[in-house]
Amino acid sequence: MNTVDIAVIGAGPSGAAAAIRAARQGVDTVVFERAAYGRDKACGDGLTPRAVGALAELGIGLDGAHLIEGLRMIAGRTERVLPWPATGRFPAHGAVWPRRRLDAALIDAAAEAGAEIVWGAEALPVFEGGEDGENGRVVGVEAGGRRWRAGLVVAACGAPGKAARMLGATRVRQEPYGVAIRSYAASPRHAERYLEACLTMRDADGHSVPGYGWIFPAGDGAVNIGVGALSTMKRFKRLNLNTLLDLYHDQVRESWETGPYLERPRAWRLPMSSVRRHGPGWVAVGDAAGLINPMNGEGIDYGLESGMIAADLFVRDPASAPELYDRTVGERFDAFLRTGRRFSFLIGHPAILGAGLRLAVGAQAVADITLRVMGNLVDSESPGSAGRVLAAADRILAAADPLLRRTRARG
Image (cartoon, rainbow, N blue to C red; front, side, top):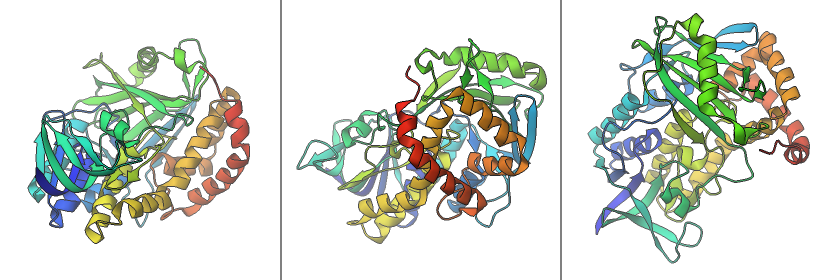
């Protein structure tokens, strides 16, 4: 049996961030990825200013990315162009970086830092004293018929995988989740510096969809085009994502002069909660921990930050790292993400969704708050005016939450 300090399951942004941070501090680290090198992940490819800040903290330059200055929000006939705000904590720019290249840059940095990368190997946790993440202690991983003993196992494998299910790091079934689909299309506007998000989406029957359509210019001749929706909408089970994407593509085809899809559209599910994100000997980071903003479906920045937090706490004290990790992540993110989940139930009602969108884009002050929410720029460490407004909204939504859940859309 091999012995390491940290074993990471998954070579995406959260797993790579944990490996980079740990290996640079002299921690013996191994990363397991079931795909081959050059893995791709269905994603919008957008990096918020928060994500860019996390990459800078990891020492990852943006040489392969297309810089973005802000967000163009569209609701019906109303359009607002909003530059990313300058803050003391996050830069005033984001980026678009296709995941194949972003993930490669991150895992290359992990390998350069000294982490061992094992490709084409599905790693599963090994337990002592029980058979799952609730009753047993995780003492390592098994992959390809071999075992590695580890002081900490970092689950960076997303929520749907077998490893996450074994640990109990799965979505809370009563909570909302998102679905999304994307492709790429050629466009002469591929080098624009603003993301575009259409907040007024309708399905093939004309029903309002709580979610948005996006065009993210990649700067390489193409744009990332996609749509996302929340599970709280009426007729959700009948929603056809391919049709919704085609409708949106038709809507933007003239303004963006887009060509046909460059590849088959790919869909994915966005978990926005987690039953457990830590236990004896293990922590879950990124998507596996449910760290996705319900109001925009973004999670790369939270994945990077949670990976770094896990590694730093292990270096400080391996024994207390899992429990302290859960507390630290909870203090930083939980209140904001809880507000987003409650908000998801609210906008599942079409009348409320329509009125809310008119307010969100129609008034400059509210649009500025919406921008900070869409940029993941609000948490316990940088609340600002947007954070205060969201805190007040959370108190109201907390009182309405039981009613919102009872009257939520069903299928």
